[in-house]
Length: 200
Image (cartoon, rainbow, N blue to C red; front, side, top):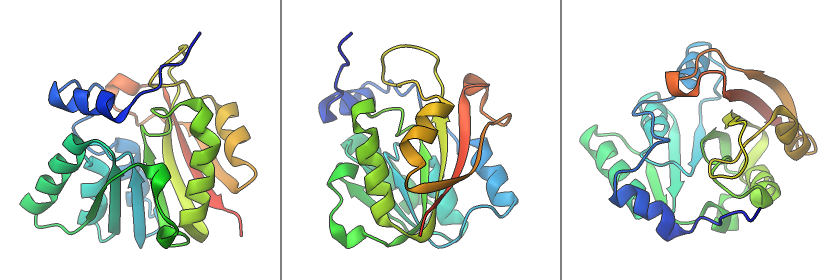
């Protein structure tokens, strides 16, 4: 089976037609719980493939210095407007996550992963790990919801526990990795909640 490579134009088309099946319309509930439990390291945070940026807004509201990145103009425009309406500060980059330059290396305390790892081709997963490793500070955290679709093809591409362990174990200490019971209804029993700490 040939994987369909999703282009920038493909993603932009979803915004133009308002076909945003992945968009929950709210911050993912497991992240709210982690914040309440003080498990998210406050500081500089980056949200890759931010989409409409519900997580970005949540982080900005709670004192994070947040950077969002998405290569869909529709996502970036929406998020910039949403931040402005709420008088929140945040940096929104309209570019490809994989093209982040070295000025971002070792900058972030937290990378918050939500529906980006499953959206990229599985062939890009090691590139993702290397990029996240580079931009995090020593001991920085990757906190993510990884989508277990149980299906072939994509996007979204299936992510199993083994996929996460194999891809991240070299560069990260996996502190927690479990199916979360707090997923939004349409993702019940389909999300791995991972808390991963960059190895020094």
